[in-house]
Image (tube, rainbow over all chains, first blue to last red; front, side, top):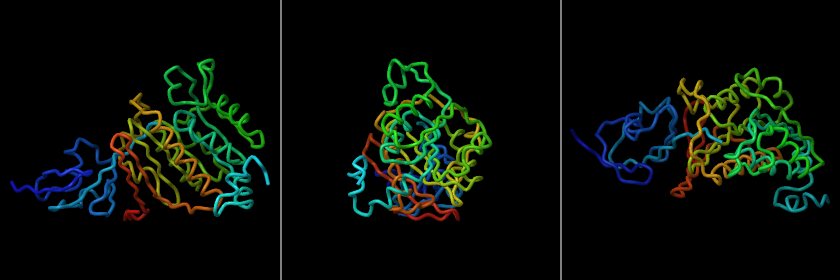
Length: 69
Length: 238
């Protein structure tokens, strides 16, 4: 298994090479259907997470949507 | 010059015409809890001409830490009329209407949306927020969604092709009732302040409505995020 280093929400993380953004969000314990994210400045929603392959050095911001008030 | 509004009238880009637009504006606020308690006095104080408040809940002791429109003596009272009464005391020059009503499907809001310039969702669950968003889309009413949980505040500008279901795609969310999740009072208020700011700027004509605009702040790590989501599912970062 090959691993790569990325930055997620400001912190360095090691993930499997070839992993999708959707898999990454699931591994963080979040429901991808309730998140929006950006990868290297490009934003994505649940509709496109599975199409985004994570690469070495990617800078990822994951925003878990909250609904309370 | 109206002394009540003199400090905002003096703002760059504001003035009498912007104030007239606020006085003519009709806003529907769904939810008078932690978020609603922050935004409602700001809307009233700034002179939004007509404010309708929808809520079915009653004041409880656990609300008082963040729901600052209410007092201990009002525990057990219905929030919508209590909030409306308070706003009327803040600004007697505006019209405030209370609807003590539960929103369980888009049709429950459809009768309240005609003629509304902006709907602000200050409810407390994914289910209610999806319902409000669907109702606003059906009525072609622009929406500001303000939410909070834990230390996090969020705001979304929805409408003109962008719905909350473009952001939350989880079907289970449609049947998930409100949870009593932990919440930091200032986080609820910050999202309400953001919602009030957006409503006042947009309705006064000093800021454009950007459908799909999202912002989030986390008090636990001081992290701020901002996206703009477009209806065609492509995204731009601010």
